[in-house]
Length: 359
Length: 111
Image (tube, rainbow over all chains, first blue to last red):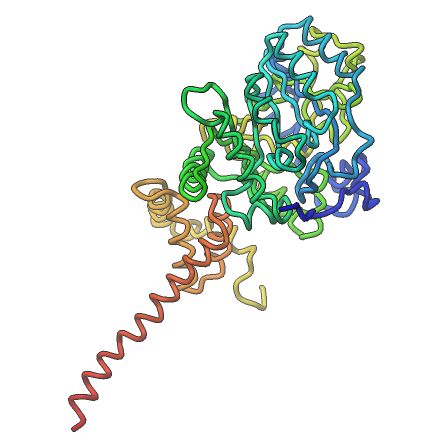
């Protein structure tokens, strides 16, 4: 079944929100809404981080956004990815700069995201090079890419051969909840892809091939308890489809890009921001992912996280590109904060690896 | 003073019931929290029960609160509607089962 796209990219719609500076104005109550909320820096100051400043604990994860090209146009996408975003793809030279940094520093994990990262023509070569360097590789896979075209059908075997950890988006075990966020037909194709991953050993005990699902709410509400959601997903996916997986990561939707557009259009923006602020958990601040991650754009610029990247908030300091990668300076930088950061500190906290506290 | 009942904003004031009788409110909220925690039933299952009861009692605050809770805890539309159907079926059943009383009484009075 082919996918019926849920929406169009903000970019192709010529939306004001395609401009990252405009998004920051909305988040600070200066465009589209006059709703203003306490500054995030003040909140973390109260949480015990002096002067509202947050610094890294190290750089353990090298997260690369290799492009905005995607076979899906999900309604919540913080990257504003889609089939029309063909121009924004990492080139070979930038991949080589990444390999140079990875070979010089003890950074254990390479986390590859997009768009659909597998659509980048250099993807497989790069994964193999990372494996050769002894890095742990995570691929953030939308699942449907595996069945989208015959040239991607062997991705499960490729992942298995390189021991790639697969982190797959699946917002629900029901077709209605999934397709309402990701497009009609996505659920059916996702189940087919999950079965293909299971068939080569992913999500099966004793194989060492990790298949983790990424849950994010398909609407203006916060994720519930991660362990409870994982149990229910495991039970339902096995019962209905005989699909198994390792862990479920519950991620909060950040109020940026297309999810911000959805919040504004559905008149949920103020109540969603207030829900994030009401759920602010001081205990979650210490574990947010920007403290051990560096995020790289398709052009080779450096960011504190993928969300800052999508708001074009580059790392503080003078070296903001891979060419000027300074491990020591980056390890002591001040992390750039703004109002969207409330998304990572709500409830049990949120990161690309799911919740950051034990509730 | 609002000129309508059931302002959604009033739900946020629920905790204020303690302003006029704190010991009882404290006991209520402590008990309520304990009841809704995971036990033999999961929080998701308890939220579905609460959603059904909210409809049976026709409480707009509870319907909003437990629609959100059900979604947050991972239920989908089909499960939520089934919970409401259960509440509706029990309500209808309780009306209909009273008809046995009517039938008993009518049988006694008629030839």
